[in-house]
Amino acid sequence: MNKVILMGRLTRDPETRYSTGDNPMAIGKFSIAVDRRFKRNGDEQTTDFFNCTAFGKQGEFVEKYLRKGTKVLVEGELRNDNYTNKNGEKVYSMNIVTNNIEFAESKNAGSDNSGYVPANPPAGEAPDNDFMNLPDIKDSDLPF
Image (cartoon, rainbow, N blue to C red; front, side, top):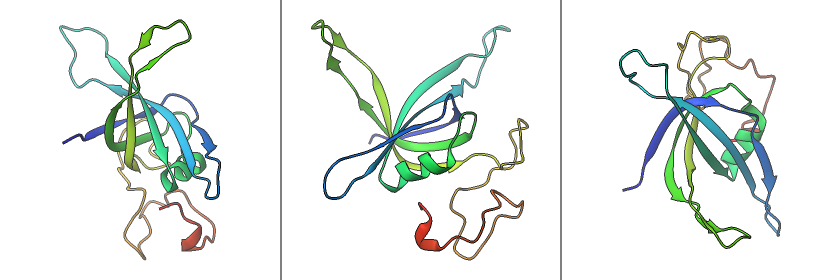
C-alpha cells in the first residue's frame, strides 16, 4: 500500500499546464510546507517541503482555487522522480501524486488553524461560514 496524507500550506502559487493531444488534461504542480509535530529540547519548529502533482479535474481545481499560503489536506501516493541530468549524474527526488485535495481551513480562518471545511460538501449543502462565497455557478462548471 502506498498512501500519503499531508496537511500544510502552499509555498508559492501553483503552476498549471495542459497536456497536448485530442483530450488536453490539466497538470497542476505545487509544493506544500508541513510542520513536524514535535520539537526537540526547545529547538525551533522544523518544516518539511513536499512537491505535489494533480492531474485532470484536480489539476483544474488547483489552478482555480489554490494560492500561496492556502492550507490544504493532500491525500495521494508517493512516487520516485529519479532521472539522469545532462551531466550524467543520477538525481533522486520524490513527488506526491494527489488523489484528493481539500481545504484545511475556511477562507476567513486566517492563521488560527481552525475551521476545517471540506472542498466538496455533500450535494445541496452549503458550508455554514460563507466559505468562498461563490457566485451562481452550474454544477457542471465545478472541478469536483
